[in-house]
Length: 172
Image (cartoon, rainbow, N blue to C red; front, side, top):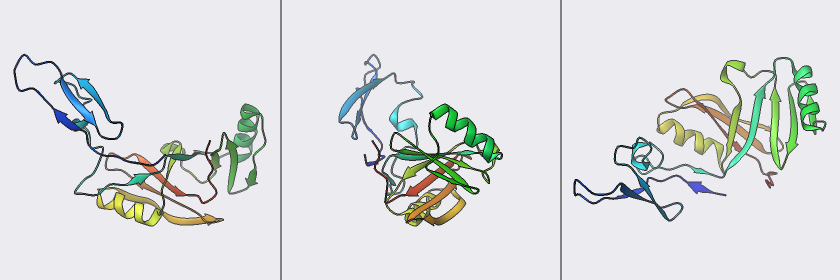
């Protein structure tokens, strides 16, 4: 699924006793009602095109958990999932789970938590767009093998956003 996040358009009656403001969500082509004081209205979030720029995300692809004790983490996840990893090396362990990647990374900082990777068509371009929108490079774009390219950026609020191009992805 590909989605370019865009802001909703507001439809509002200007009367003081009017019902809650309606918003048309252009992505889903539906109308939703939000109380006028709602903090969850589409126009209250920075969730779309900024200065005419939007980043096309192709859906979630991968979650990578920090694993300082890689052997223990591999044993635990193998038991939990009921399967052995398809890729097991000292620098990375990967499981295929319902068409998605669950990875264990011994060099990841546990303070950063799990790293979620969004699929994109061009990682360096996506990183440049994120940086132009105020993000900072966390991990530069890197070819990690077999044509798979990853990068992470830190959003202005400090969250880590993973970006990945995986030509082998066949999600379910």
